[in-house]
Length: 291
Length: 296
Image 1 (cartoon, chains in turn orange, green):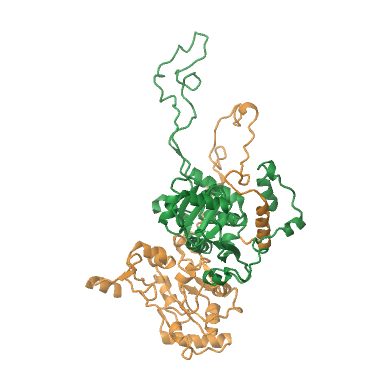
Image 2 (cartoon, one colour; image 1 turned 60 degrees about the horizontal axis):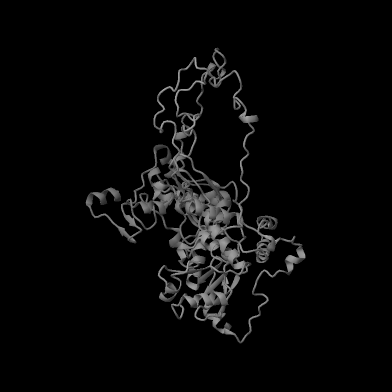
């Protein structure tokens, strides 16, 4: 709560002339609830009427004939919509604001964990939210940061805005089990569970994430660089050379398709209390986590 | 807001009947107590370089609060240096309502009401119809332990156990601490000392010290850790109005109950650091379930 400093200083100055604040001269605001008026001596029937008791009929009941809401059949327009994956949006303007207010560190790759940790973005896995949808509705002209960002869905304009500034954008998929780890890493590490391996996207998403136009993480890197050129020509900007960039190593950092956290492999157990990482030695486990 | 403060002090007593504050009077009240005390260059201000505090989370336009660093090893106070205090901890809005909420919470959350009034079922007897339904000309009754009867059960009496436990929101508790510290500093009831080391373990020494410096009858000494120097522990052992407290025990009720609050430099650093961290922490919304019992 931002109170004007002058007001605060004046209030503290007033206190200097007042008696010492103690347990016996403090008071809260008046939070009293208004009691409903009930009538003299309690109101007799206490507000329930004289002759008719609690005979509540079903809502919509029309005294016998088929009610209106049952006369007609239901057309379930949105029956399977709850199964659809949702990607709560982050506009380019919002992303720029996060960077400008130091909530995001542009010297490190940005992924879903970083965006969730800003505290400004919220998503709920229970509502079938699968990650960030980077939109170009707002902030396409204002965006001016060079970043290595990994989102779950990106519009063409958003990809263009990022690449125009010399950045790198990748779209990748996290399955719901991994999302619990990614969206709240601190809470996940407190559990002490091994880092899960990412599963491949479901059938209707594989095409999206294998496409170079969407900068999918399963796409062919050569096709991706061709797509970058094509997009630059389409939007009319000169594609900056990443190879000549001093941040080349940071910009080209990418996660393995099975990896969730940068620098940590699936199967490892992070112990916050012992401040150590435990790695599996068993052959079966290694085979499971590395394939 | 100023009117609110004056309303809260309405019933304080005849000595402190509150005059209305015209703007000109307010402007003449110095907000910073040290503005008028010009520190002579010959004083121990040269030593102040050792006590220069680095304030975290300080926007460029914010002015720090100031307080003297005093000593405890002589009866009369020696001002060692001026310390800068963070305005968000020691100069925040004096929220009397938040202080009241904190005090109410502290006094109530441990309260357990074990009173129980016997209901009609819990009293002995009461199973037989006291007199026939009809014929006697008396009112009809089914049990002589019904609430209508003398010595009958209580219909809606206290039913043990009743808990008054509730958790005041975390941010309100943080605000309570910062507001109380600000009030203490503003009312000249906050003193900062180097450490709690005193030359003797004599109770008389502390009493004379408090009297000479005109500190309130009750003093709360706060140090960083819970193991205190031997001398002050012995000196304050038999007094109930001089109390020692570690920094983690700092609470609004104790600060209000004791007239004067004395912090050591180490305690000040710890308290300021912790409060600033919690004021500026990332409010994700995931902290809202922190105090549900199942999470412990």
